[in-house]
Every structure is written in structure tokens, then in C-alpha cells.
Length: 134
Image 1 (cartoon, one colour):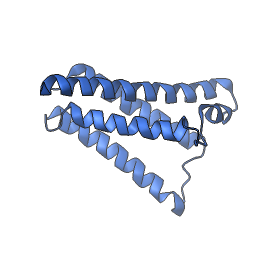
Image 2 (spheres, rainbow, N blue to C red):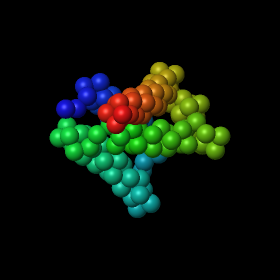
Image 3 (cartoon, rainbow, N blue to C red):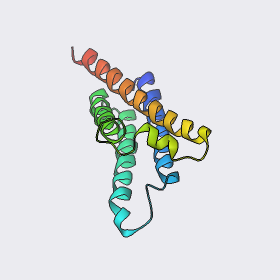
Image 4 (spheres, rainbow, N blue to C red):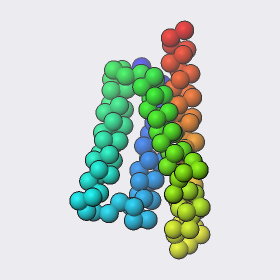
């Protein structure tokens, strides 16, 4: 039977991920062109993995370890893309990409919330896996 707290984290993760991707669209990072095909394919793959993963979790075909690995991968990519010393799209960049402070605060807040939920999902899913394995 799926864990309800993990399920809430997963739904929140998907919602925040959609919000963050919408932020990228608003800022013009995802433009419709032939060169943008890899971006759209990766987005399609991301949501296919999340959707099928959620479906299979509800059917007890995948467990918490699946979500721990996926959340760890997402947190790593998020850190590399937005918080590492090599990042071009830092929170400051995202904030200043908006004409209003409210828009910038909302976009950076979405990113921060997404990262926190990824880390919480990683830790909680790992805890559930270790508890079940031990």
C-alpha cells in the first residue's frame, strides 16, 4: 500500500516541477524551433517518468527506492542548473528576468520550494526504503 505522506510529496513535486517549467517558458528558455527539440523531448521524458512512476507506485510495482533515486537525480540536476558555481541561471538571474519583483519572487520561490521538496522526497523515500529493507 502506498505511503500517503510520500504520495503528497510526489504530487507536490509534480506541481512544483510544472510551475518551474512554466517559469522557463515565461522567461523564454523554451522556444519553439528545431534546435529546441531536445528540450521538449527531455520534458516529455521527465513527465512520462513521473506519471508512469506515480501510476506504478499506486499499483505497488515500484517502491520508495525508485523515488529516492529519482528525487536524488532531480536535486542534483537542479543544483547543477541553478546553484552551482558554473550555473548561468542562478536565483539572481531568474529574479531579474522578471519586470516586477513579485514575478521574480514567485519564480525563485517556486525553484526553492521545488528543491526543498526534492530533498524531502529523497530523504523520506530513503527512510521508507531502509525501514522496509531492515
